[in-house]
Image 1 (cartoon, rainbow, N blue to C red):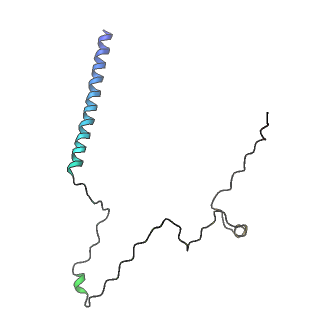
Image 2: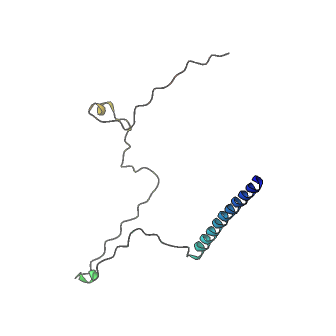
Image 3: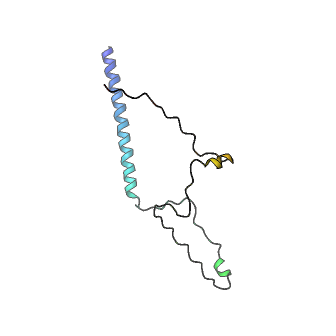
Length: 118
């Protein structure tokens, strides 16, 4: 009777596993179909675009020239020459005046006796 019971439990476990796998495949298929049906270009925007108040353009008496947009910054990957690099550890004179080092003190070097030649 125990062999009969183990066969039954194995069959139930197999049916549950097959149902879970089938459910996963169905969900994956539905997701792929939904992704393909949408347009490929979508814009994600966190905030609403700025809108001027209605009639703001008509309130100006003299049409003023719009200021030119600032130029796009060029990135070259190099450090700007006007910003000098700061040391991680201040000079001894600066430490005496109260400047704290940015990095913790370096650990002492571990040395071992020299290896003897055979």
